[in-house]
Image (cartoon, helix red, strand yellow):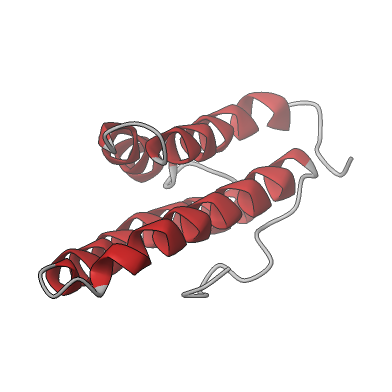
Length: 116
């Protein structure tokens, strides 16, 4: 691992946020809102590589909100019903990839990505 001895405590909040995001796939999405609030609170004082994770987490929330809005609007004409499972997969992949990167002590591979 590339983490130093103090980074275990520093990596706990982003890991919790990733877990909340993954739980948001199953829950009523309230965990996503809790997660993004935690990300906003902790990002300022984090190490630079962890700030990239917080950026990735915050972008995941807002991009996911945009995608969910589009899926909702398209659900009116039945096309959007196909997008909801894709949105869940998208959130799951981003959550797992980010969580793995935190555990390995590295920043997310592509924090500015709209996909993975």
